[in-house]
Image (tube, rainbow, N blue to C red; front, side):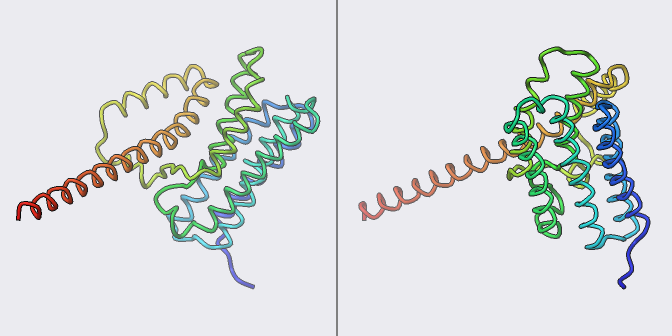
Length: 254
């Protein structure tokens, strides 16, 4: 039997355990506790990857195991939580929305596994499923703890948006591309300090702002890149056209 790396897979197992506990708490109606333990699972999900890279302990087994744990914790659990909390009275539509979110999370993870050694070395293609779950559950925690009556009606639309972002071709930065050790504009530090203050005094707001900021970064960055590439193509086409016109003019003069 082929040997496996123990340490990073222990953190993946902790992620898996958090997903199971979250599901059991959802059955008990402990929605807020379930949401928080899924957020805790994100810590284990982050650490397992960092440990694997630090000790050069990456493997195909670890990749597949991590995706299975992520699908349970960040795909099925958030979908089921929102279904039990709000969509249960929607009948087939509620089941359909929960299925849409879960299956798109599965598709996102499957695509990640096939592209892990190529396109996603420096960037994630599509919103990562842990961040998607973070946006959804932090919004749930926000309306739950602050008793924002009526805001829960936005949950189905948020699920649809996040489902689309997970399977989109928008690129999201990894720690490698963020390059926090290098010099950055002063506003980066200001923004981090503001988010830190918000998180310190208003955890609910801070969590939501943090996850949404990352999701928006990839979306805005990808759109800005596409606009820039379009302008470059237009400028190149214009210069080529001017060159052909000038060449034709010279030939007529001859």
